[in-house]
Image 1 (cartoon, rainbow, N blue to C red):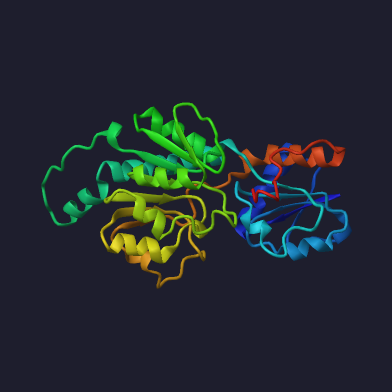
Image 2: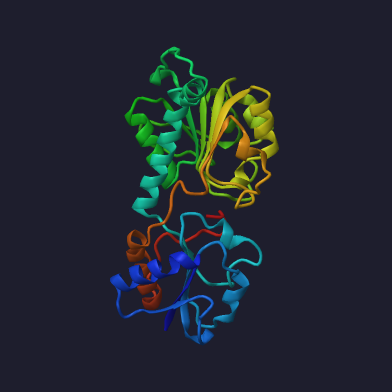
Length: 310
């Protein structure tokens, strides 16, 4: 029985080599060269793969997302009924996202956009020193990524709040939850960081009403999914002067169209969905472990809860 890989062509070989390094006995096939559909027992896929295609494989036991998010796999028609889906919870993914969040929090906290503007204009002027303990950070989502980022920020002295749907205790992080908690946290967040999974309930969560609650001069950082942010509302908050800046790694759609206002906006810092990139060699042991569990009928790790959407 074989494992089907489906991702960008340039990444396919790295995934194949990483999986074979863990288990040299694996039969690896790279889409679209799947061979006999009845020979596929697991599919390791990323965003470009059509879920309808997986209905061709009658002996499929497992689908694995190559990233921490799975919203791309749950879009209609979704995975074949009854086939479990696992996501990656990988140390390297978590580390990279924490680095990206910390980079951008410090970028805004230490007034880097202002100093870069002064450099362009050849202006030598010292700005008032910021106080870390007075810069309040609000994190939307306290899963693996959000909890790790919160720890990094706390470690250098930022007061950190975290919002979740239901109460969740994270050491040193003030937890707010539910609709009232969301509004209360936004009103106190000088920098608002989105690390939520994308579900029907969280789509468009960063909208005009939420942004309007933030303190004037605040910043937004989105490393989750483009669908969390209502672009027109964020642009209006930036252009109107209510917000001072935004750091965005994810967009809707991707790649971002060349004529989109974000490209040239003076208050927007962009990266091309590169905040946290799966490293196959790091993720492969987890994938192989789940494959063995599926073969042996043992419980899977990091199984997606379809009712929750992640």
